Image (cartoon, rainbow, N blue to C red; front, side, top):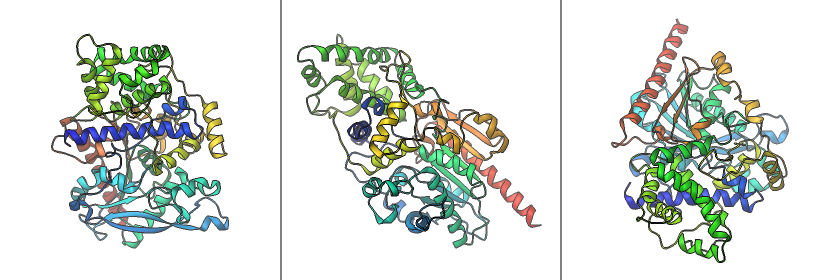
Length: 506
């Protein structure tokens, strides 16, 4: 990626996360709560407005299909039997075929259009030849082209009865139906299935293996914060890692950021202070309050840390700008210098970007129903001002928006989470939890082996979902080794499956 494209990608991602803040704020979720709920996502999206497409060399190998999916897997009311078209994509290029019981790699779509995920996820394609594997990518219900009743996502989410079928449990049941259907259609009932997911999709992959072990032989769950529910992970886990990333990059940079919040408030409180801040930070519009600027900067730092990947290492970029400001620069001038290095030297910087993104609307419902990840900041425990997560406020605002309160304990009730090490070692198997410790969401991930087959693979310098992105010639050795380890583990699962399968046939 060239410098211009990198700057565009960074600007787009900052914009998207700013959108999340503003989306919640303008739909009754308090800004203080929304600020601290960074979106899960596989990769950095492209520049705002730029379509995501496959290269011709990749896209020609993929075939699109639709499955008549059951609306409600868990009830027997007449309307439960309604079906909708769910999109899935297959690549047969390297598949060894049903007669050889060659494996099937299945990517479980997450909170995005399937095209968006496929454009960034390379693990399946990079390794399909080695395994002679069929590749399958399944779109998550209510995203992309997989919305019930032929509605738009907006129409589906506005209808309380229809959006009630939008849940993770329904989604993984969808995946089970599609996988079983594909295996029967291809006469590949004996082909072992490995499910792969990243971020929210990584959570789905691990939960799928737990709930449907008869369908999937194993799961690779990349950057899956399955422990960031209830009180399992401290609220400040996410922003503590962001803080750690910046402090390790530069102590002086960390101190400058930490001191900047009170300086922003001090300037804002002065006569014409907001005008001064607007001019200093070259905002496209006059700031209405200091929180607009602080939210924008908080998001920028979070994005830099979450996707702190080689070769650019965004945290280093930001700190390079802050520390490299002209000698004698005041705190806010140094902060602005970091912003300019990260985003590029632009005529103005928008701190008030509102987008009506389908992904934002869908994920907004998921976070207000069951995906309640309590991210917050306490007093003096990060480089950010204190904004604790308040479940009462969050529940009130979600109820105001959707007419029903969140179920903050449902994820741990349905999938588990508490005492994970004790529980999973007794019945779970064949799950890889992969993480990069520079990823703030790793604070809610599984970071140590639970058993001989429920394994944690992490890298000190890795970032969010980095291991399942496309491999490149510039990948550092530690990333190459992480992927190699994951592949070898999956190979061992499949080899043991074939041993057991042939033994049973005798």
